[in-house]
Image 1: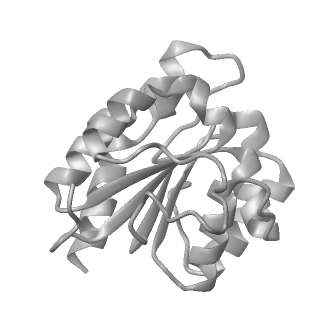
Image 2: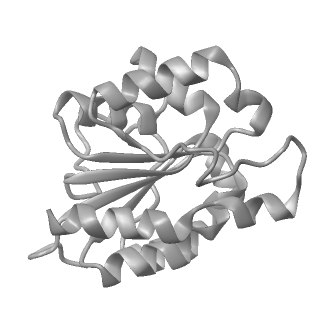
Length: 183
């Protein structure tokens, strides 16, 4: 799928149930004018239908580093969305850890001042952890748009199961990514 005339958005999926719901999100982003590529953390893979996502995007889902002499299967990103963003990923981003391909690309994006929208999905107990609040504040100070507001986007309780997936703010994220595209 050519990128001509369409900016490239990397949708980064972390290990959480909402990662299974990426296909309709990808379709909405494409309708909004984005060329979408998907990057997954190793923990996200168990939730995702890699073949369906590759068919939608025209690219394989990247989850591991390539060899230095290999060409990249994906075009360079113009912006990033992290959906879902785990407690682990938010905290590691804030410290600059790059122990996964997803974190490495996100840290480079911060360094390049590319737009990033993150939707953290910790459970309510983890959302109360002081390190998480520090990480969210730090990322926001670096220009990362963090969609974290417990009154607007409630989080699941631990072990909530299937109803937790209904809490993910896909509609608001699509709107934010569409607005980002229009800038």
